[in-house]
Image 1: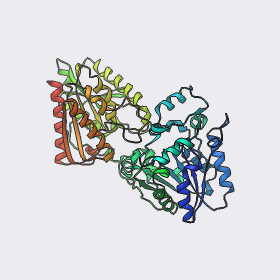
Image 2: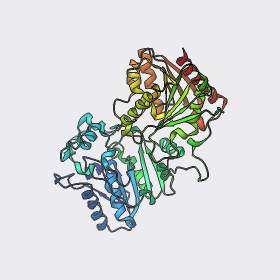
Image 3: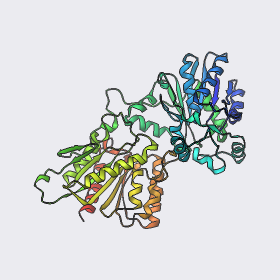
Image 4: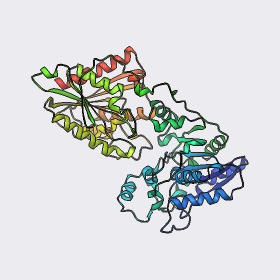
Length: 500
């Protein structure tokens, strides 16, 4: 049977695994629930991530088993990866239990969902420890869905402060964690799912291709962020199956296949002159040189997060080039900026990039500064929040295609300011054109319904264009009369508001 080392997330120790440990041992497994330094007794001033890595290395060296399954929950994945990097031949499998995907140089702080804690420690204002949450405060660290009342009470009673240096010290790795057998356990009530993983792999960003490796498997648990408390029996069963290599495997496009986001745009649109100004591309109407008046502009806002190293960048993707050319063919200037949404904590920076791009465009003498539309896509939809909260008079329309309109469960790294479902009530008479796909991911569809309910309650002017047989990102994967008609309708609606 397998040998498990169980490493929990912040504020907790080996006690949090009691029920899972009992079930694994009953199945004949050898189990080591770990209480890291400072997570039982008070932490010393020098307790950091390296301390916790050494804790695990010493334990692994004492275990008399040919291979060890290391399970890292939340923060626990950081010391797990550090220890596996130092004892690679001793590790049979790494299990990411509702955990992030840190790489070399990443501190655990980058994955802390509590925004206040993240900002305080980032600014150097935090003390030597982070006090544990209590009661409803645990929701700032992950969904508590499914945890019984008595288990929540135990979480409050037994939790301890987390040494700050364990969160701020960067993880150092000599190789990729995915060079060995890996399993991801996804807790759907906390926002992760197989569907989201498959979309990430299919969309092509290089950092996600490792999730389709030959020794990478996945399981879903329909519970919140602490399955050892909310679903211990199910979690124990999943860990036993993971140890023998079971689980769902994700397929990646073959090397010779282009990723979905580089597929051709669903409409044939004539080329348009393009100018590049910094991170902003302008697609110009062919007759612009002969025009005696400035033209309206449509600013397209891509989704993400997208790696800063990804090439080509979004403004060179066929889909966004296609939309920009479509706007140009209809007499407007198609604007395609690239913003720096590289991670869920980057929305404020991306919002600044977008605001700068809009001001650059409005200052261009070829643009009618009083006739601008913003068109948001996918997770870029959260960036519409500011514009809906206080629409400037020159903003004639906001369009959205398969948008994320509220941070889904688990997206606690997103600043609370970016919630269009909460700000749409301030949009007034601003026209909103929303393209909704019928084959949307449930977690995203829920945010759209929340938005539409809020819009209906406040009388917001929302035009919904439904595309029943289309997927998220349909422009390069679902080429049909229905999808082409939807894009044409949305574009004509946007241009109609710009020209009215």
